[in-house]
Image (tube, rainbow, N blue to C red; front, top):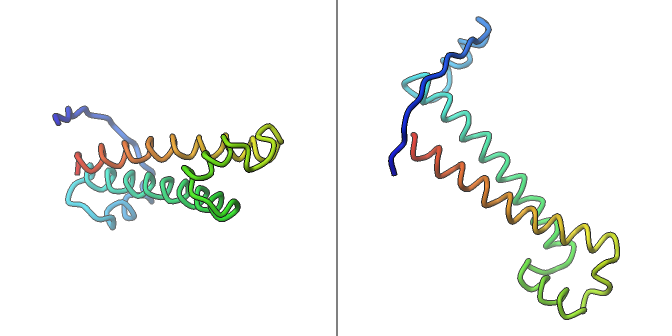
Length: 110
């Protein structure tokens, strides 16, 4: 994978510089990439936590949940709470893929 570099000028308040200097990394680019990676990981963890809460709520992993939903074993799939949980769970799966792509990209830069 080829990663093209581009430049950007960032103006930070003077008081922020010591904090940035204390971050892990030899260069400013490495420090900022590390901070971005930490933020993306945080978002991924939040996504996983919300997915886990749905698994606990229904006592099922997503695949089994969808099979039961499609078979009508979970009740009316258009009931508001169930329908919104289905949509959110689907969104969380897509969101996880999104954040994982960013993790792979940032790790390639590190």
